[in-house]
Image (cartoon, rainbow over all chains, first blue to last red; front, side, top):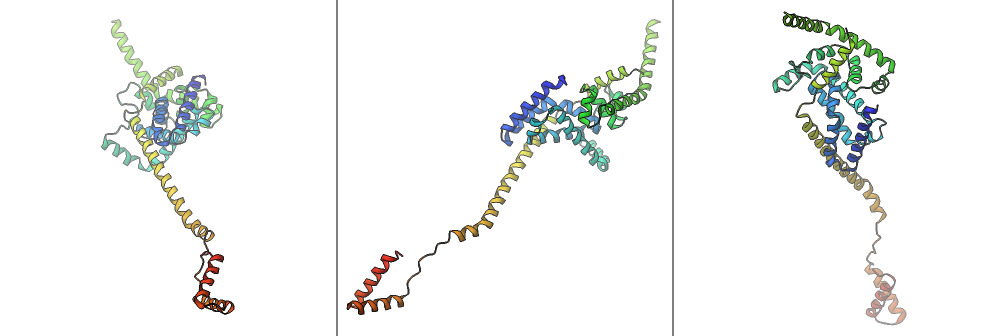
Amino acid sequence: MDRDTDLNEKLRQTAREIATVESEERTLGLSVLYDLTAERLVRLAATITRHQQDSEDAVSAALVKLAARPQLLISADRPWHYVLRMVRNESLVILRSRGRWTSIGRLADRLVGRAADVVAQRDESRHIWDALSNIPGRQREVVVLKIWEQMTFAEIGEVLDITPSTAASRYRYALEKLSRHLRPHFESTRQENDVVGSGVAQ
Amino acid sequence: MNHQLIEQELALLAESITPTQLHRSRILDDATQESRGERIKRHWSRVVIGCSLVLFCGPLLGSMIEVDLPRPRRAQAVESAALEHATQTQTSYDWALVEVFKRQSATDPW
């Protein structure tokens, strides 16, 4: 919680500044809000939607709403948790509406050259992303909040509207599944290292 | 398999997930369009409220401020009053008419 105390204060301050200006001048406040939060929010949205464009759309929708109604942030007990919840909801809405348009959308993305992959194919972390993408969404979001947002299970429970023990058990199951998914990758890496190691020894 | 290793790998993964370069400008454009749309909506709602006020409250206000304008006196009534005055005061009809008009303008300023 201490980690985000400063962020909460900054968010509340930015929201107050946005609230004092006319709606036409709110883009400046929004840019500050973006710089404070966007990177972390896109990460969360990406793990829910598993699609770059969709995750950015979810973040856009949430931030534009907040710029139009800054009171939501001012009155929130923990503004950062509130923003996370908003982005999560927007991501879920996009995910639900995407269903039937998925294949057409993917084709359109390819045609206009828009990035659909959250993590590039050649990225070193691609294997872990693939493993994370293959576990259930409910477990995925707990993992993300725990590791990337460094939240306690109580805080995760608050954001996801579940009990801390549910959050903890989802996390445990997620790590078990990730472990199974990643075993072949780690084993092949170890074998490669062994080969290199024996070559050096010889 | 070591969970700590997986947690380390996951932490590293965060660096690979970033917004695209155009995202920032796109979001600011969206916000500008949103506020423009909001302004237009606000303008039209004001116009609609103004028109409804004129339509519904106009007739009511009109009936409240309606003025009962003095109507022109009938020539026949003036003539009979002048004749009566002439016989009572033994004056000519023309002077009686003048008297009737004077009396009339004193009581009713038209």
